[in-house]
Image (cartoon, rainbow, N blue to C red):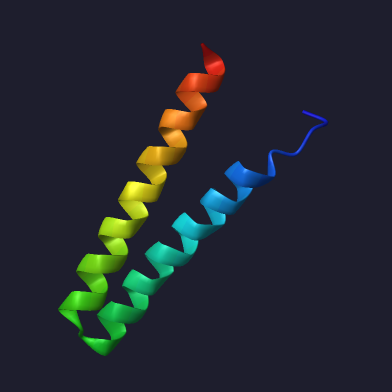
Length: 57
């Protein structure tokens, strides 16, 4: 793994930030922030997994 896949790294960072935003939403007791950030995190993660499957085949 000498080559860094920058787009996938960017997606992974977005997923981490999204789930961190869910933690902030919990602290703020804002259901909308929690739901939206979790939904966004799972959508981005699913997209990243689909990209990984396409690269493997």
